Image (cartoon, rainbow, N blue to C red; front, side, top):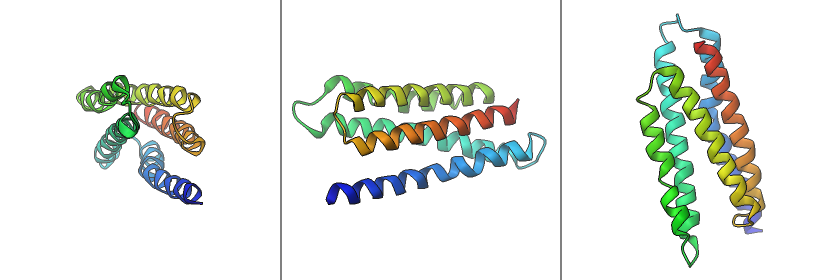
Length: 147
């Protein structure tokens, strides 16, 4: 029963974390780059995106140290999303969004391999696949907004 409740809570929190993507991406597309609020909304979108990518690395850090023996390779790699997320914020806007989109796809693939190895509960895999898809779609919408 605890796993069921944990899975439901994780779904709810994950969907709540998607709300800024769900609100900002269509807003940016609809308002257009000439709108005076566009730059502010865009900055919020890309910073939120970088924060979530860093958070995903933190999840992987937690999995890497959850059991002994520790997964040193995954522990080392788990900090890469944070470093890359920070770096891509320094790129020109279109490259930032494209790089974040690619990084979310790569992280989703990395998670898929981890899930297929049976190292996380199946419900976590469903969350990660669903949220990766939704976040990638949001980034594609923003790419169209700035095109």
